[in-house]
Image (cartoon, rainbow, N blue to C red; front, side, top):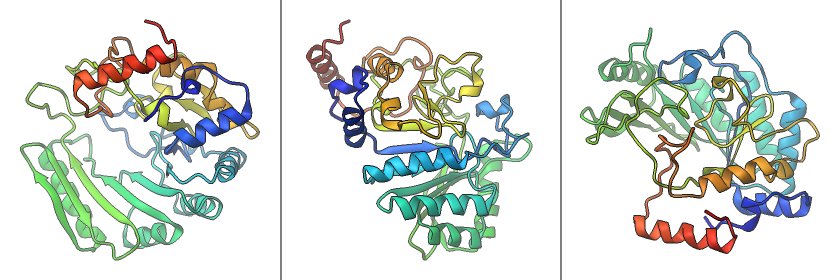
Length: 324
């Protein structure tokens, strides 16, 4: 990732904003709905109401985003989840996927799901519509989330799919099982079972505290920058734009973490280049993330020697006059 001046300072020039977005963004996560059928204890949906309303992304909003991505010949990843279950309504999900593949065929569509609605026929439909990757995670029943319970649930789901599979990871000590499913189709499919409450040898909780919205002790302090807001666009079902996947906007009492809003006629490139986004990136482009909500986040850590990373950050901070 090579930071540009436009990442740190807002622009009202649509040509500059478009070029910056095209050069930068490789992952787009947009919730095609606001509904989730589960209330997992390790997710903000455990106390946020995401189950009483369907809350579909409007046709106008979806079309606006897709049309503008088509205009830049977008070829990155598109995911249709953000604290929602994207597969709850098969006809709706398939129609949205087809809209993407017909308008921006170079985009790679990935589905992250709790797997509750998946069966063999649904997997085939997703592949035919253009999905290239499916990642499902087994969750327990009645908040039974011991690794033993999750492993049994994973086995039950794999049997239901009636597809051949093998375990790429099967490590009870690490609380992780990853099954690679051979679909025979043009889609990769992995099924996970995680022990979300496992701690590593340093006592760091595996599960995220979701931008400090969950009442869990992470036991981690971040001393790295975060590049996620430089390379991703995160859009809620109603158009609210967020810095990263860790933030569920409904889990907070104010709008401090909402960086923009897309409506049916909004220029998405200008919105991604606005003053709130720029300020957030300046905050993230620092080796000391000591303030909320990033202070305890270990998502998307950068695998560089600490000294090299410090030099890299200092170079660009000096180059663009970002100050202390």
